[in-house]
Amino acid sequence: MDTDDDGRRRIYDLLLFLPVSVAVLAYEGDGEGWTVVANESGDEPYRAAIDALIEHRDYELEEEGAVRELVEKFYGVTEEHLGIGDGANG
Image 1 (cartoon, rainbow, N blue to C red):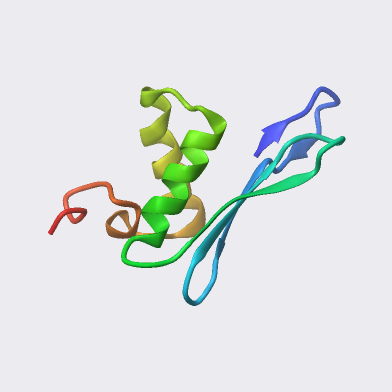
Image 2: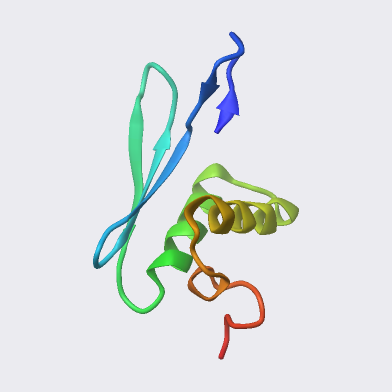
């Protein structure tokens, strides 16, 4: 979520948590609309989906941790699902 030039809050990225996958949609602007960035399933769909969003938006390394923490807080997804924190590899 971000604030546009008119001071309105807008959503630019969506993660959709489906029963068997995680889909990522990114808003590319009024002329282009929404783009499907990823629809991940398998062993680590949460991590793969967030990695796809980070790559799509070309976030810098220091921003990656902030993106993962924001997703965890906003969506209530655990660190284990996101591939961060102490429970990520065990």
